[in-house]
Length: 337
Image (cartoon, rainbow, N blue to C red; front, side, top):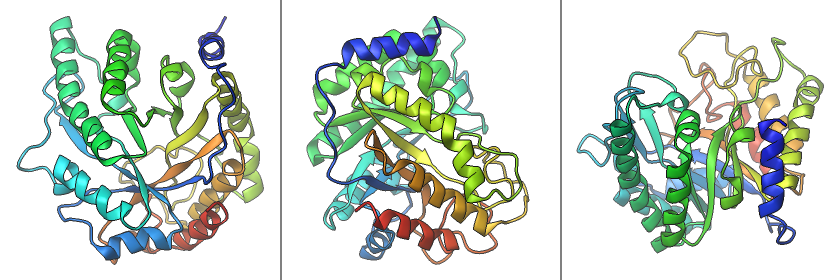
């Protein structure tokens, strides 16, 4: 029996308490990037202009490398938007204009390595790292409870950490539940969610949805739709077996040729800009998933506070800002408010 099959049985066992409720609205989310500055009305208005009703607030901690337990945060060099005070100010400024938020603490590995490969080399290092992670994340859980934040994410793309230390994660979820009474999720990478063991203890199946779709240079909407079909089937099956909705804790595409080939790539390659491909891919993912009753919504990667200079027609990165993708996504979101 495969691991995913066993997980489906486990989810079914734990989650048959009743059907999940339909949400009044989908989560039309933006991954709102922290800044040195506080949030101003103009920043909030930029979110509203996208027909977004949620943001993901993302305080980062820093790890020197994949084997170091020395996680640091709340340092003098940290940007205001990544501190407890900053996250509180961001949340309140957005909430005052009717925009809800998910708090999503994350780890950035300073040497550029992928956080999913974090793995300590000794039991002593694991224990030290786990304690630092608790010290990082629990204050944000307390803040989320104090402010009435809608969703709290317990971790982001930590595949090897989750695999190696299941008891830690089970205990951490219980500890967070004792602090925060809202909805919980975990941001599993696209190749991780099927084996994440603790979905029964959370409220959403969180997925960072950078699924590989097609090697076509400039895929049509029909090509993208066909490529999504097996993933839609698998995600629906997971949602049904766990009796929990899927939430795209991140999704997005760079404005490049081969937009659907390896959407997770964040390198600074000079791949040719393709604004239309990004627009098409974002419109397609909303049209494929947002109408599904087992799907809660998602947070596009990503939205910057430097509104005039972010993105633009020569930019091949993820943000839709100052690109055709912004208006395309805003129109797609408008259907689900």
